[in-house]
Length: 196
Image 1: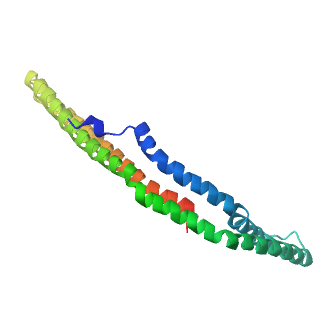
Image 2: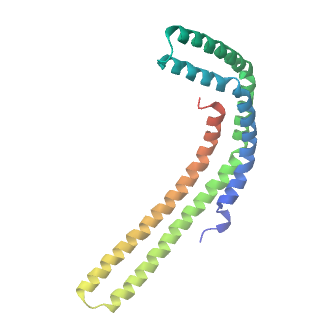
Image 3: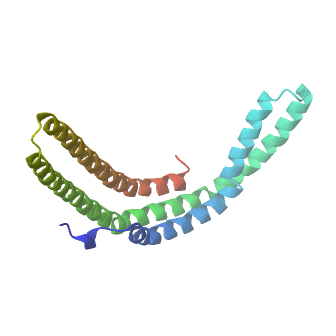
């Protein structure tokens, strides 16, 4: 059997990820505060400008007056965005460097755990197949009618297929877990950079 101690529980995995999430989450909060009156406001104002273009409620003069007002707000927001740009870039670089330096403390144990889970799943499959073969041989030994033997072989084949499907499901769960651990780092970076 595989070494059970290397297999991480979901709680243990989240404990390993917690320091990384806390550190990067703290930086993310600082960045969000800096973006609130800058980048976030620019996006909001540009959305308002786009909806103003499509809006047919206002007359041309009202539209132009509203557009000029929104344009002023946009300039102010862009000024705040430009002022905070360097500070945000430093915070993002700090978070990325932290991830580069520390993410393997979480990712490597998850990889080791996934490798052990894969071995365990294959052993479980082999044990299930051996048990099914043994049960099949005992059942066939008791039967004498050709039709019953044929039916038993059909049932046995279905049970083997079910065991194989369970193995595929277990291996896919391991693969999904490994991919989720890998993707988490890039998810954090994506949040920091606002998908840029």
